[in-house]
Length: 290
Length: 276
Image 1 (cartoon, rainbow over the protein chains, first blue to last red):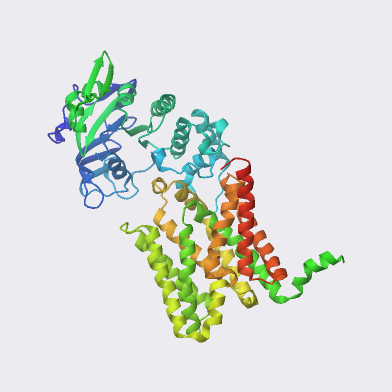
Image 2: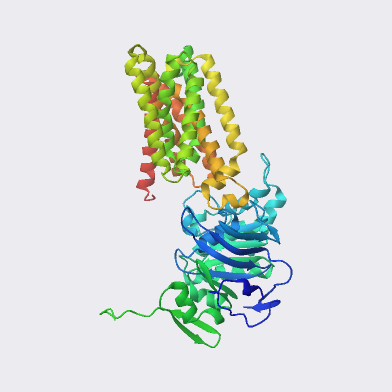
């Protein structure tokens, strides 16, 4: 079992042998080679280690979330996978070969909306067409077939009518869809999204999960980071709990327990389970501090 | 010919005005074009700082008898690289790096001027621009530089747009944000060197910053902004040149005041309409 190579801190929650998995309505295969495999990876900025001894495999068409506290290494993990940060220890392989520089191949990345200047004077279509940058040559204009493909993707994500609008005029969910469309235009086999539901209302979060499931069903692997445990529990088939180390990995119903979340967030967490539904709550503090 | 038209064309009888007008229009246009990215990247301070840093180079090249464009150009490029290197060490921000490098460079120029007082007139021209000093050779240098900068900016337009709008994601698409920024800062330095003859080191940053801000008031579309901003820059520069001739005031100052007048007119109109 691959998880026997994980650190002792990882909770062994798999009840089955690896092979064909089915969770949350989407299937992925753990046969062959993973798109990306991290083995004992430690990395971070300057003297600080964001992640330490992380083992993780991302399989084709997998859909997983990484949850954990602020400063727990979620963004460091994404940046390490993207090659923006070089690991200090451990090994990263892409399709079985050692990763190096830009060898990750077609990968899409959607950063947090808060990191983007949404007042920038740019239309939705211009944002989406930036996704062609990897293939563009100097002086080459956008080819009609590229524009057609962009329109096709925008149509799938209900953005076609909004192509001429300024990005700031869209709802949070539509903005997120525009950045997902940009990622899709590069024909990725893996999309990484950093807190895609951050700052979004319930309706927008619903839109985002709808888009993501549709993309995942077309065979694209998706890794997201999130603080929204209830949204993850309701919609995502596979979760990694990260706090510098991988604390646990598995289906939300299996690993969203008081024990695992308490260890992940270093605090008391309340978990309610009713059938397949899981709710994670906060224990209220009494006025006298008790 | 009607007297009004004759009066309007009268300044063109003088070669210094013709040369100055052509140079001002080119400078207004190229500064506006480069300035779109300066403003959107929130780098206005770098334009201001590089222009001031140029003073040291202008002074030294004058003393050792080197051509202004070569001496000041090399000086500006060295300053641009220094700013880039210091700010990318992450220990200090870009604003602090610009403050350190450019004020040192400017102070060096001031120190040399105080030693060689006989050059005061030349240095006044370097500080505030000198319309009378535009020779046909200067004109060719300004035009050639502007054309080269414009072509380079068009070639790297996708890298510039992506790294300006979303620097976090641009590297995922194979765009080196650091390299793009260095190239951009070097192009900005070259633009400022070419523009200093007209506007002087103290006023040139206005040509880089104000037209794009006016453009932002007039359009919310990036491609339109790239087209209208050089036009605004060129028209304001031409109007400023006319005002300078007829009011007998400093050309650099009148060009900048024209930018400011249009800025307040357009901004005031938006304010009256209730939009920000």
